[in-house]
Length: 144
Image (cartoon, rainbow, N blue to C red; front, side, top):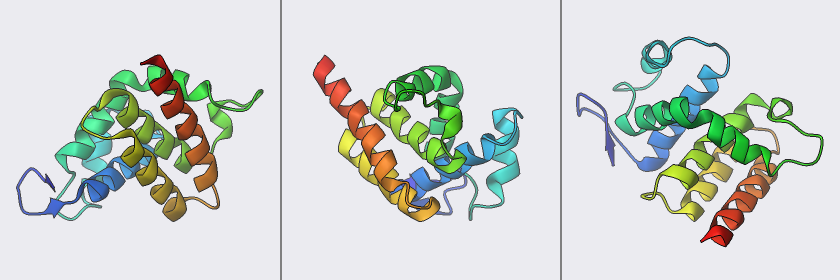
């Protein structure tokens, strides 16, 4: 469970992950500081922004370039991240961050949750999201 700061609302990890996706998606439209993005979007969530979502978005602020470089390795030749829809890119970034930096989240869970978000928030891009993340997970496991 993920609790909000005032402990009034308890969220499942899936709900917290969805908040993180929404914040990353919102952040993709402007260059405002992270704190402003969280503050601007807090009203959208019953009970405010969950700590897990804040932590993931903060982590992406720090590791975003590394995450993007990693994702870029698995795109088709000639493709760039700019060619991916903002919703799919936010989902990919969220899941890749979890896969690369959060040992508490099993890789399979991160991929499955990303595919579910893609089914909900994109138009037929869940297979694309699954393919990119599957390649990332296989490469990560090959390095071990």
